[in-house]
Length: 187
Image (cartoon, rainbow, N blue to C red):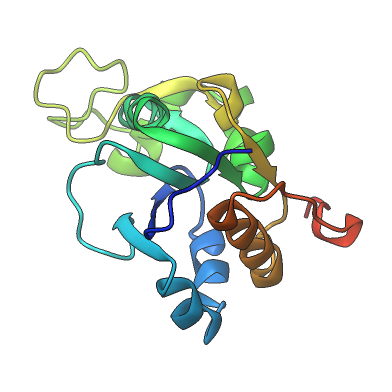
């Protein structure tokens, strides 16, 4: 397991195709967030206003499946710039609900959802329009490990706050992550 320095560990959280339930569960750490703050420096998150994924991140928690080209680029960047990548929740681990679209025609789905089934300027599901407003969908929503190597899988929909706390605490301390069976379940 990765050893960390005595200084604060840099932590990032990323939200890809998902419902934000994993981030809500992270926020449900409540008073434990104050204790965690003593050991962690949040460097990137939808909970903050960071614009660019930084270099040299110690731990990144990634929620959601990889569903479009923008998310694929972010996944590759966060892997390149992070020491420990955690697939947080069932969508990141298996694709879960976002992967339900994998049997559908993504072009027709984008036109239906964003343009009521009609052509709309700036909306090109194939990504051929230079002015595309919506990032081009990948042919399938993919679990994180299908696009980048993942170090830790933390299932749950969402994982409970105690599971997240146990995982982050172990990773911050540089200890092996051993979760009880009750914290390793899907759904």
